[in-house]
Length: 174
Image 1 (cartoon, rainbow, N blue to C red):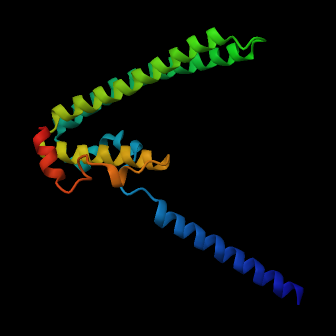
Image 2: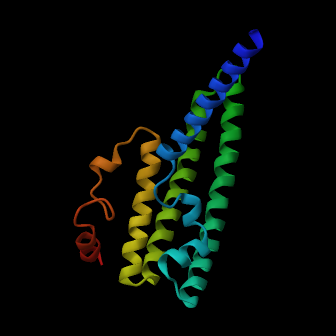
Image 3: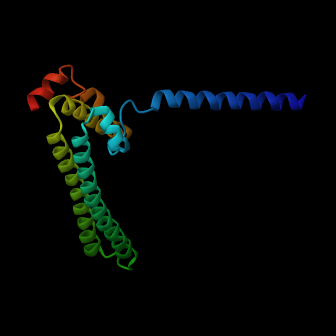
């Protein structure tokens, strides 16, 4: 009798876990391209119908971005290590910690600016149709990252890909 109850309890637990997993996959899966996909030149070539010339230009831009981001990451990580050392000191080194924090923020800001420069440079090599599609992909990707942190971009966003007149907004920007 106890074995039957245990088997029934196990079956209910497995069914509940399976239902949770399926529901989470269906509800939480990303609707558009992730940031990682936007870094994949093959994905961009497929999604934007890039020519061979455009593909080679995108590859060169990606390499330049990767070099810039690596340099920012190295500076950020070095500053973070120095921040840990400053905080580990007996006095918590407030002035030193503040200076190192400012250095970390500059490295982070530079990485964001490098990414924005990259997006702008990539847009230049795209035709109008490709640019509209790329803008929508970027907008979806950025809004999705905001939603993960409690943002309500889907209801407030008026960028390309979200507003009712997205094509008109994208065309007027070109």
